[in-house]
Image (cartoon, rainbow, N blue to C red; front, side):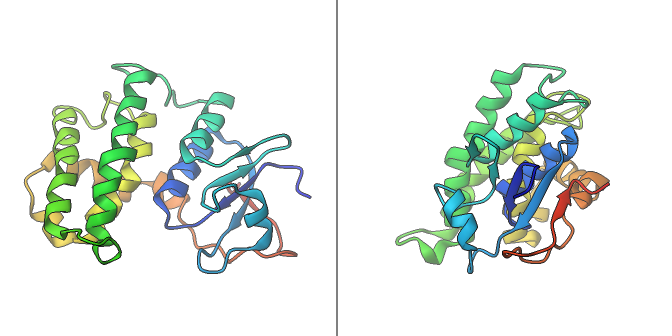
Length: 216
């Protein structure tokens, strides 16, 4: 068994992306195990109560929610002050993240995967989700990040989901007039930080050579 915390992850999952972003920022070393969602390893299913990623296995606990993984990493070490925004505070950031994870994600799922939801109207769901994006665009007025001149927990907890929304129809997204939002997203997508948490990992299975994250 690994002496390090074990992070079960899936490269493209926005929940897993934000967990990896926080772990990379904190420099907490974990063993990363890439999960293939259509063929989940038995060890992962025994570990994760929800059978979803990310899932962080600690010595005496299992964290099965992505925001909990972020807070675990940043409470251990927060060298970039993600938990201390220039404006607002942790509570105001978490309130915004809750809006993202709640109504916005609900509409995002029904927009991106509308055929999976009976009665979902793709354009109506897109319009409903866009209400939250306009809110973000206003927050970004005159500043590069949601809570000031430097990034915080809120930015990296929300950006993977904005990216997922944009990629559902990038031509439509780019045609909208939310310039602050688009600049924010492009800065994230082209950043060294984002690229560092997005290499392609092989599927983990029992007996696989351990993969350590973040890489040295």
